[in-house]
Image (cartoon, rainbow, N blue to C red):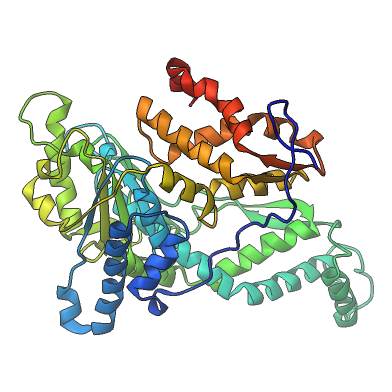
Length: 470
């Protein structure tokens, strides 16, 4: 066994394992304590923020159990996360949405500008969220009909491989009873013995079925008209293409799945999920905080807030799938608030973000935990990546401690980017090993503290160099 040292030699105990995937669970099964426990698998610390989002998620489930007029009157308590970049704000929201299996959209508030300025319309985030929800529902429906679609695709393939006597093709002689022949081909087809044979199938070329128009903000939005249904002959030209049986099977399966899915039902279910379970992470809210009355681009800040207000407060947005109400969408806004303060937001918007949680800055201890505890920590990611090259990689305890200490040092000397600094350090640290990995097959590699110091110490000490490299 070799060991990584200043000379570049390496060593590590075998048996490193890659973390398992998150167990499947539905929101119905999870109490707030369990939601926090699930978030702990991916985000270190920040208990206050985790508790807040866990309660918000459970309250959504509680409201759905009530039903009736009372449920319509219970609005989500939107959350404002306050904390520096790289402390886990986005990751908490993203993991929460995945846990709830809810439509999720992350958007930067700084991308929006008030009416009259070039930028994106605030309502576009609801249209984007609806697209995501419809895609999620369509994928679920496709899985539901996959078996039936596969059977239909197989039948169509057999018709191509063993055509009717009147159809040009092989086996088109005097034989009229094609049942036994097709059953023989069915067995060969399922065994994969026909995968490389060529067949000719019809493929529908995708064409845009909606119109686009310029908005007053200078952006481009789709007009919510289903032109494909109104003028079916105008859209979707079909062409014939020769492909292998393996390729044809997948293409035909997708075609049959589309026929079995009720697109109108998909749109309705997508809208319902947005209205009842949608989650929007509104990042960089601090960039539009401020009510200055000067001239120039900054005058749009309050305008953006006022355009965001009805969306967060509850309004109806027109999408190409139908009207979407935003009353019960959960909004999680976040910002560093280094320059501005939460009180710089207009009072009306502050009132729609009643739950405020402050995320703490990350120190050495948190960095050590981030490098080792999460199911997809950076050390486990690099171990898995290099394992594909036949290289067994591990990190000693003092190496992790050293990386964490250097991350704190670089963050203190340059811009503090929180846990994201670990990614830059790890990439630089393992640059040589990653480059030489294809020639290092079947080697065991241990990265220790000495190797970390030799690889990164000079860069960290040189403040000018670290600004560019790290």
